[in-house]
Amino acid sequence: MALSLASVGPMMALSGNAQGIAGYIGAAVPVAFACAAGGVLLIALGFAILSRHTAHMGSVYGLVGKAIGPRSGMFSGLAILGAYVALATCCGGIFAATFNSLLQQIQGAAAFQLPWIVPALFCVVVAATLAFAGTSTVARVLLISELLGVGLALVLAIAVFAKGGAPSTGIDLSSTLDLDGIAPSALLAAGVMGFLAWAGFEAGAALGEETANPRRNIPLALVGVVVIVGLLYTFVMTALVCGFGTDASGLEALESSGSTLGDLGTRYLGTGFGIAIVITVCISAFAGNLALASAAGRIIFALARDGIGPQALAKSHPKLGVPTNAIVTVLVLNAACNTLGWATSFTDMGTGNPAIDAFIYFASIGSVALLVTYLTVQVASIRHSFTQFRTGAAVGMFALLTLGGVGVVLVLLANLRAQESILTGPATWGLLWCGVGLAVALFSSRATAHRIQSSLQPEPEYDAGAVVAAEAGILSRDQ
Image (cartoon, rainbow, N blue to C red):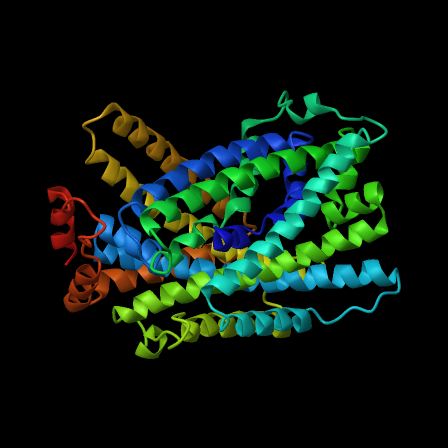
């Protein structure tokens, strides 16, 4: 649960997502997050269904591979690997931007600013050090980091409500629920941004082989994170909108804020609190980098263990049992990508802040690859629920999962269309990475597919029944 929570990085979303959403639907920001929570919960149900039957360090590589077939699992594993590497890389950019913002808040207008690559590389070095601390230690660090920030965000939200909100509009809850005059396309665009605030919630599935009773605890953790974060987002976003004000001037101040939590904290609880909450956003960015690199490393380990990659990456630490080689490899890739972006400016997205540009660029790549992965999980879970059509509950679950799959397709298309250039935009690069993964899966040798299928066979101590006949047919065709 800690790994999933840190991968989501709720403090980063609370501090930076409301600005874009308000540009589409005004004061109804909480509605967008509430709608997005429902959509993400449908995806989480798909993960939960598959996780009840499979516990695998490769996350979707094992989940989809066991449900549909080895080549399908290989494609899903490579897609989510690209997503996690890109999303871990983007955390370096937001860490650097937040760190420099913190320096400015502490020092004032004439603040000394570091080249953004310096704090980004510092973030990677510290994460690499913690990679050798063991799974439970890392989980504690991630959980404490996020809970500290979430605690301060809740204190701020309560303070906003206790002080009556913005002087001009007060606690105007009716405006935060009002969708009158908002075009469906604007609501969809806002929902897309809200949907991506949960990106990474499924990272906890990568701990399937390191968790006690994974077939119970992994589904509970994934669904639990989605529900808890959804409630947090809705409550705090309501306070944010009321704190800035639901009128035109208040919404303009919200949209132009560099850190909504920091600015609101300073306004309602003083400069010291504003600085403290910006520090927690900075820590959240670091925690996200470490969590996503940890999840990506475990996927690399699982792939290499089955012969897809160098065998050196299929080795775990002799004492810790953690795939440190693979995790450090991901962190080196993070450092290399950010350094290349800093040196060549290929990540320039026109914001005027190169660290934010790098964040947006790599986040766009990772988000598309992640959405493709979500789609494969929905297909696998829909197929699984179809085989259980003997009960009314299974029919209802099938309908919910299908609705979730349609939602993923809509969000994916919206991401691709939002680019200035459909041919060279970063989201397209994410889709191309998935294309490479598909080619690798399709053209891999029959021996590789057979080896993967053997590694994904049901474990008698966990699985009560055999693989259904329909699944067996797909598996044989996949070979």
